[in-house]
Image (tube, rainbow, N blue to C red; front, side, top):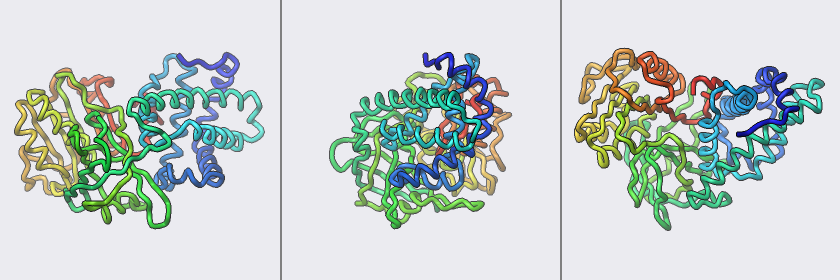
Amino acid sequence: MLKLSPESEAVVKETAGVVAEIADDATVIFYRDMFEAHPELLNVFNVANQAIGEQPKALAASVVAFAVHLINPEAPDFTPIMQRIAHKHVSLGISPEQYLIVGHYLLGAVAKVLGDAATPEIAAAWDEVYWLFATSLIAEEARLYANAGTDPKVPYRPYRVVERFEESDEVFSLLLSPVDGVVPGHYTGQYVSIAVDLPDGRRQPRQYTISSGPRGDSLRVTIKRVRGVNGAPDGRVSGWLYDYATPGTILDVSQPAGDVILDDTDKPLVLVSAGIGITPVAAIMEDLSRRQPERTVRLFHADKTHAHHALYDGLRRQVLAMADARAQNWYEEGAEEAPTLHPARPGFMDLSDVELPENAEVFMCGPLPFMQMARKTLMDQGVPSESIHYEVFGPDMWAQNPTSV
């Protein structure tokens, strides 16, 4: 059980609200100063998330939520967020030494924003918060590296693109096989990072769900080419992979990671997804149709049109092969003409009137607002919050509201 010293606990209780208010501003300064001094870290952090401000907000929310967890025994358990961050970090090859750099510039940024209000007592208390946060992550990440047999100094292995499948206009799948050795064991629902060297010389990693069940000799990732909207940039890594990842291409791939995984029970499952969030659902269904074809499963998916619904044909086969699997889709356009197994519904997903199996575990993947709405609807239907699990592509902004976890 992590605890602050009595002196620091008193200071953090007094200042947590103020730090929460200035946290976003502080993290913007933090990233600016850190990247200026350590440009090599630009090869680790997602530059697109920096550009639209998501990464700073996610970091700020996580540190503040951790502090609240330390000072308030009634606060939601921070462990799930901590585990999720650790999995993201091992997929990126984060090392303990990098926490020294982050701590120096993060705490320095907080002091800059607070100005004269940043007394030595306040600085010492929040330094203690940060290092409790950091050492917890370092320990969990060391465990994950060791279990996978990964040297964090060499976090990527070369994989060859064996096959490529065009799933829709903007979605494609890559079948990857390691150049030497075997595919590491992974759990259904996990993801890998793929790091590419871009034309401007910058190296960028992105996480992609393993959209196939465990196979032994290969793994499949399914990728959506990201188009920037409302001023956001196009996805540089997904765009590079779309243009250049063809059979024979060698890619740097991390160890599998991710804490939202398929369990080995026989409990009913409810799978809720939207858009490219279908990828972990596809992996789960491939695995279940082979190992647990009698298991009760309900699939609920939302997409723009049937043509945008990636991996549909394989999912259809798996639903038909299982004894008690049913699927319901929602399409914003063309639902009435969609050639689906069960008539599609028009518009956005609405789970308020769907039939749910009793005592089900729920897995969700899709845009954050979509999942928040789906979660609320499911809880209104009587599904306990602890039975609802989610995977987020990109920074986990859910930490800004820990009661949503």
